[in-house]
Each structure stands twice: as C-alpha cells, then as structure tokens.
Length: 346
Image 1: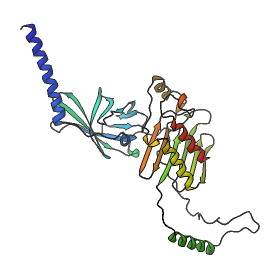
Image 2: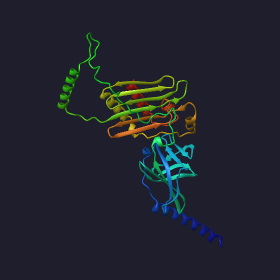
Image 3: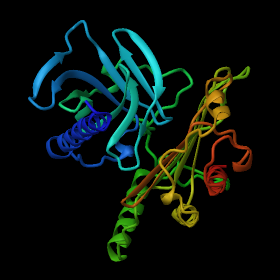
Image 4: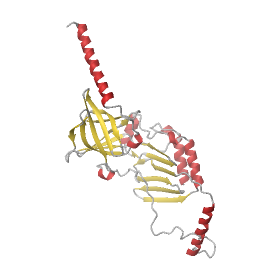
C-alpha cells in the first residue's frame, strides 16, 4: 500500500472513532444538567451498583462483602472508605457544574448524570461504545463509616431553654432598698398591658437573621481548643462558646438590641459577603503541606442568614493574622467581617 493511502486510512479511522464517541456522548448520554457545589459539600454517599449505560444492564452490585462510601468535604478533600480501608484524595467540580474530578480505580473524570438529595449517579467512558454508571444513595452521619475527629466542630448549634426555668421570675429586681420579686398577679397584669399595646401597634415583619462564626486557629499547644463558636440569634441573643482541653466548656450569653444586629448585617452586606465564593482553598504547594502539619489548622466557617438569603463561607486555614499573611487568597473584607462579629460578641 502506498504511504499516502496508509496515512489517509489511519486518519479516517481516528476521525471516525472520535466522531462516534462524540455522537454517543451527545446524543445518547448527555449533556447533563449542572449541579450546585454548595449542595454537594459535606454530603456522604454509599455505592449500590454499576450499570452499562447503553443497555442499562447491572454489571456489578454491592453485596455484604463490598462496602464503598465517599464523603465530599468542604476543604476540597474526598474521604473514601472501601472495604475497611480509608483514603483521602482531592476532589473538584468543574465551573460548568457537570463533571467531578477525583480518582477511583484509575478513573479521574466523572460526568454527573443525576444528583438529588437521595441519589447520585456518576458516569465514565471506557471507550467509544461503552460507558458505565456508578449509582450512590445518600447516607446519614450515623450510618456512614466516617467519624468526626476530636478537633472538628459541629455543623449545627442547637440552643435549648432549660426546662422548669421561668424567664420572668427575676424580673423587677433592683438594687434599691426593699427589693422583691414581682408577684404572679403583677406579672400577668404587665403581660396583658403589653399584649394590648402590641395589638394597637402596627406589626412590622423584620427579616430573619442568624450569624454563626465557627472555628479558626489551630489544634495544638498545651491547652488545645476543642470548640470556638459565636452564634448571634434572631432575637438578639449572642452565645459565645469556648471549650479547651484543660479548662472545659465556657459559655457566655448576652442580649443586644435588634438595631445592633441590623447594623452588623448592613456592614456585612456593604463588604459584599453574599458575593463571596463558597470555599477558598489552597492554591500553592506550601499551603497544601501546611494543612497536614502540626498543629493542625481548624477551618473557619462563617454562615449568615438574612431573610431568604443564606451564605456559608469556609476557609481551611485561618490564623487570624489577616489576608496579607495568609497562605490562602481570600477577600480581605473577610477580616473586617470577622472582627465586627467578634466585637459585637464581646
């Protein structure tokens, strides 16, 4: 065969295979709708079975001897559990929200076929005529093999009123001579007056507000910090929690006027907090190395709810020294926001 004919045949075969692959992917298996990274963060999944995409035939199914779990952590690391063995590797969702990058069985790119609160289906292509779909189901924390480490902080803070305590029992106490508790009759009379005044006054619906500042710093030293949280509630209650290894848990509570909270929210909005990214991760090798060194960094998490808007921003390394000294490139306005929250909680 002449050399030109041979080269032509090779090129024709290559282009034919490429066209077949692209046609298969475009016509039969995609494109798939984008997903939001925020909904994937901190989610845990259990593998159930694998299907051949073109025939929908089950080619593998998890039995009692095969256990595979994945955990998409907010710090950009994917925690995996495969038959009793734990491993950690990076994960990333592309800008279009259609492809996940993490390595499993030498596969590094996965198309997101379906993603709901209960179902996750990932697909990879073996060659032009075959692709396979991994099916996962969502699992709760108590059913997943991943355990919180000692230094990790809770995602949700729940405050409960102590049963049997009457919030009005110490109302009316002063430092004047003859101080005494108000009687139940006086308390009920005051409540009736307030209720009557409230009915006459026009009702103003204020937007719901909650601000949470969790973590930051490092897990190390002689007196390790296990918890460092500030929560500002909608009713003006501010709860500051600090728990150390030697001194235990210290909780300080105080109330501020709604006007103070509204001023803080206005300041936060002026710093464009709601336009920030969900997570600011390491971009340098020095930063990646620092995450695993001792003392271990504790991620900073700021969650702000204002009306129907809610934003959560997380930074895996936060030493409190400011943006210019940080290993992570985050908006410098975030330093001002953290300082303002801490000042209101003082």
